Image (tube, rainbow, N blue to C red):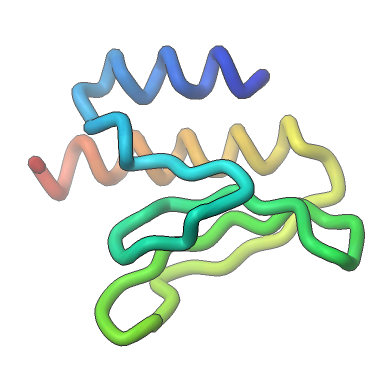
Length: 81
């Protein structure tokens, strides 16, 4: 999945634009996809006091976007915003 596809599908789920952040910022409540210094794509979600709800790494950006979308689907279904 490309970034454009991911953004479109997140919007179709009814999630706000700030649900996803790619390469920053790492704000509270953001679901972040970040290319780190280890040459991996990291997908994580920050909650209160910097606690991570999930933190997964991927070699391919497409896999990171696919994972982020699974989290978006879950969020849209169980955490109505």
